[in-house]
Structures are given as C-alpha cells and as structure tokens.
Image 1 (cartoon, rainbow, N blue to C red):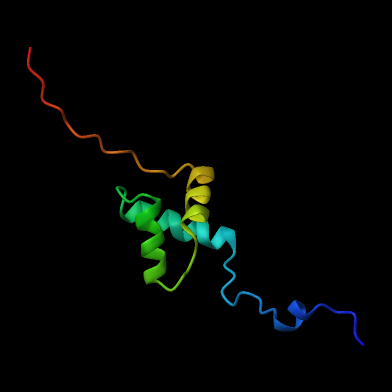
Image 2 (spheres, rainbow, N blue to C red; image 1 turned 90 degrees about the vertical axis):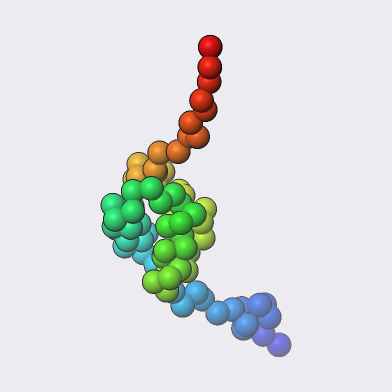
Length: 80
C-alpha cells in the first residue's frame, strides 16, 4: 500500500498562475487609462481580458504600488 495521501492524486495546480510583476504592470496600465477606477473596477477590467484574479490581490498590489484612486466625496451644499 502506498503512503501518499489521496488528495495528492486529485490535486490540479492553477492553470493561469499570473506573475505579480506582470499583473502590477497591467493594473498600472488600466489605472493610467482610467484614473477614476478603483480596485473593484480594475478587477472587472482584468476579468474582461481573461486574467482571473481576486479583488483582494488587486487591492494589495495597488496599495504596494501606490496607485489607488482618490475617493469621490459628494458635495454637500450648506447654508449659514
């Protein structure tokens, strides 16, 4: 009897393992083209280009590269 676990027989590695530097370049390219895009929209834009990646990873890369967009605040009209 073999001593390997059953899970190792069924294990399949991820087919689309994207290098982080390539992903960071692509995120930077999208962020320059659309400066108002946040990490959620960039994740969707990457998915449209068949680069399936988690939104948390996109956020982490954007935070480390310092390419997060500014938050649009709603204008509140006040009177005196």
